[in-house]
Image (cartoon, rainbow, N blue to C red):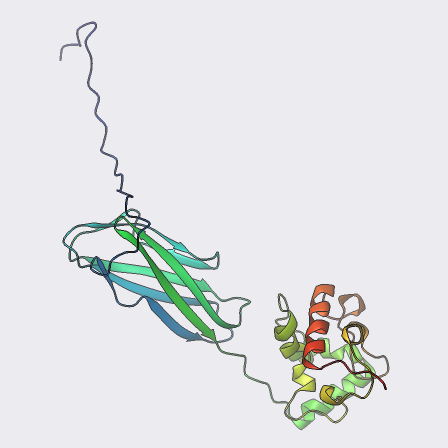
Amino acid sequence: MAAPAPGSLTLVTSPTVYAPDMTHARDPLPDSVLFWDAAMKTMDASNNQEQAQFVFNVTNVSTDPVTIISALPSCHCTQAELPATPWILPPGVGGQIKVSVDLRGKMGTLYKSVAVTTDKGMKNLVVGINIQPAPEHVMTEAELENGIAASKVDRQAVFKGDCAQCHNKNLAGKYGPQLFAVTCAICHEATHRASMVPDLHHLTGPTGVEFWRVWITSGKPGSLMPAFAKAQGGPLDDVQIASLAQYLNAIYPPTVNH
């Protein structure tokens, strides 16, 4: 093959690079373009389930190819999986978008969304998860008596051994009402409240935020009330104690001596 003549131009070609038309990417996606089996999906999850997984089925019902450019979740605990990006769906062709939500450390009902962007517009997909509460452990009379006996010797015993399963578990990241449910209510609001556990609805002395903060922090030596502060061998940090004191003050209105 002859070499190019001096001074001549050599034509170099490169592969075509796909560039989607983004003109309508921010517009709402018309229903006549893509058909979804649902725009919102929900499920119930057990209290110890680590992930919730959903599958959205989509079909191109238009007469033109549709390019799905991205699927962006509403937060870091949610992930969306596409077959590829850009994902080109010819007319009549369908596929799946998989969505997963990390449930670790979460409780109650959650709603997350995924913004799907195409060259024909945007579509929001929503998932809802109802996390079931942990089943209440009903203590036997023998367990209750053993726990009371251990607490009389060491009031911090509720945070150790078998007692820790109820009193010192899943406390991280919980504040206010959630923290109350797993630290206070299990004793003070129990269906079969032990006779030596005070009824917080009928306290006779003055109360207030500081009253609750002191009791939560230090408990009461010589009684069954433990100290919840980490500095005193308990499981709660200062922010958790402050949030709990505020919540207790709200649900048990302050009382004063007259």
